[in-house]
Length: 336
Image 1 (tube, one colour):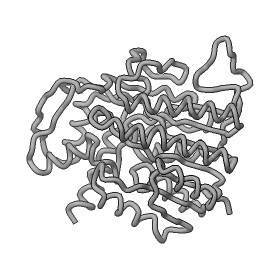
Image 2: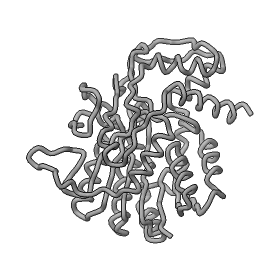
Image 3: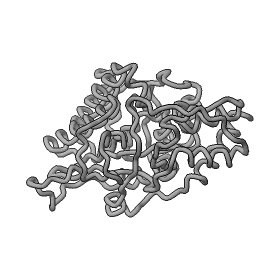
């Protein structure tokens, strides 16, 4: 049976993707370093959903540990790699850049070396809409240049994309990068706005609304993300026969390399997102209006035409529906 290695399997997206793979009857080896960036108890709870669901094996390994990663690839010999482990968080990258260098750069290099050694059938890795940085043209397209990141986190994700291209070109490793747009939903990350807003509102506390509430995000529901990820994973990247080196499309290559946006293509004002949460909770938020934070982007919006053309799927879960599902999970998990 083929083996899929899922890094960051105790994370938000990692747990959901591993769960879907197990439900499909696949063998999954998951790794995570279980760091304390946010509640480790939540990470263990996610792992609890994976254990016993099928052919699942977990190992606590940090992707930045070169020797451990080399031994893992040699032992597991994965056919496919879904690389979702990373140090996340735009604002945290301003305070703790070394964590991003270790996990997102050194760790990604170890992933690439493992994929090279085993000649994996497909490497799919998480990039981010943050790579669009200072771009002002909306919606963001994979054809756009992404040379002006506004956070170190975004810079590491841009670096991952070009590192991956080099390995696809040099060693023929089919490689696909996925630019996720503000993912939310059940089992989400406590450092994300929806989680923090919900916790504060239920406690009767004020919420911090950055950018005076005028920020715009392409909020994308977790189930849509997982569907897109698995469809891409099942279709290895191939060289683009129409790629023109004189007018290159950054999203394709003469190498087996692709980049895709995965977003809802429905940019939503932050205040409308809060309104959806107020409706789901049945309470009105006490809002503390604040300026935009260093490293934050003002607006994001995904052009998903390339994804739709490649795998026939476009995320479409409405924000009000997705937020209501999150609240249902949150109450069940924390109030039961």
